[in-house]
Image: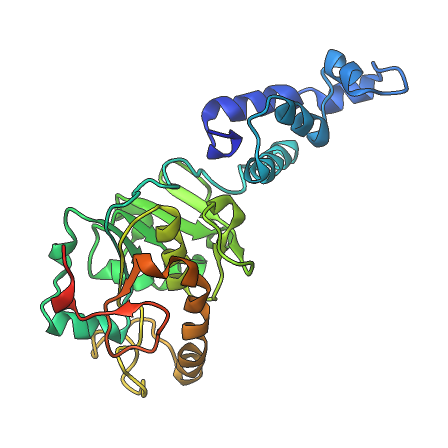
Length: 294
């Protein structure tokens, strides 16, 4: 394992390397020219020096380097860690089935074909946004920002027992239960340190997270539009839902952009199944719930 998984020993190491930087510099205990070795002897290390020492240890790849810089900068600024922790994510569910579940109209189609939330029991799962209000037992749960926490009918922070994934805009601090990730517009990778692909839609990030987990197959439920072209009654799978839902303009953008955003995952299309035969996402094989083989 590299450095970026957030083990406590790594954070202690960084703190030890940097705890006396400013004090030592103020005391002017180093003679010029300043070399890395002289800094080391005097206990003065800046971020680049610390990074160089880690590289010399031979256990740092590009992702580790980015994580290390972010953690060091947080410590130098006397702030909590910016992102992470990322332990237990990459290949955590390798070659095991996983369900990524949203709350769009496509889920209503699956329910008509016999889907029930209890059928997720015993399988890996990622819940997206307000679906947590209907089922509290997803293994992982993902949302993007603090607005969700304000609008949700379910108190995720105090009641949900699984692992939470959110962006820095959520206002949450990384912990054993909460992983903070960056969004990116770069093409998706299999390393979470590089960010989750940003289609401005939580479900896109959640699918990317499932890919990083190594899950196979990945079943998408409630992630497509279910053949719905008019959202006068909302885009939620429950027609009487009174919570947050896409307005007309947002729905039009959804219909236009979502198929394009999901096409970014074509590299992994053989692992992904869209359980919405009436939906617009064409990158992945589409099946009805009746055809899901578990």
